[in-house]
Image (cartoon, rainbow, N blue to C red; front, side, top):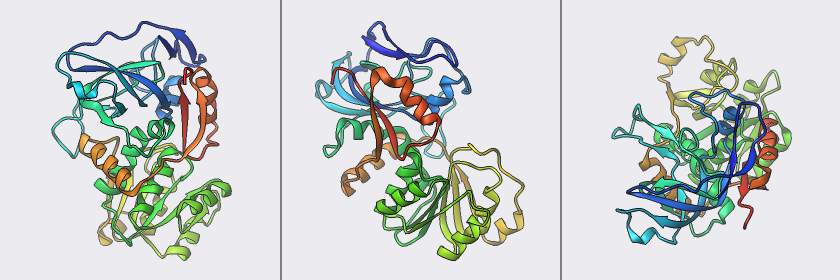
Length: 334
């Protein structure tokens, strides 16, 4: 089969012929119709991720048709249209993942290939409304932000929600989830065009975080926020404490702008704030997300679709952060 292979850090991704996976008990072989990139894939390509091995077939997100099943797998899955839960070995605790938790695409070979092997427990029916490309965009970023907005942030109808850095895949999903839940959603971005796109999706308003007074602008627009979803940290995080309403929840799942800055703890305890870390999601989160998608007929935002053979070009687009929504790869034979 053909697959996109990373042979070393900093080297271009290449389309190569590799061996088709052999199935073990309880495993299924999925013929990938479309896959999607995450920021994780970019960090791996430049060698800035834990546990990298070479060669690697990257890709956590994928949708396709079950081509083969191993012993112990229910026959219902054969020839069915599926999406894959990329979070494996979560464990018994809803609040946190097991020590042996892994994400599809490293160390296991991922979805940037004609076929991928996964345990059948990670297969879910593809939402009927979605195209292959839209379905492939959903798993990792969708689940991460669903958990951030609802499981951790406990966003409710009518609450004011702030999403920082709305342009990427996670920001776009967080926006879609909160809008569908009838929250009042505000955003930040470094691009006026992306703020306008967010308004078209349902954001009340947005501000450019490059402005010195971005936090003051948000205060004037919204007064304060019940839930804040952040993936950057860095010095600006201090302002989020000021923007949070009493009883507010600040949820973060990334640190692209640095570490936590010094915070005034008195503001945190006096306002009864919760600062919550989260990452990825449990099987319950994934199942709840799919129910939410089907119930609200949510269509993921896809920025651009590349052919699988053009994976290296797709990663470079992600590097430049010009996208709004997800970058998707379509299998070359489709």
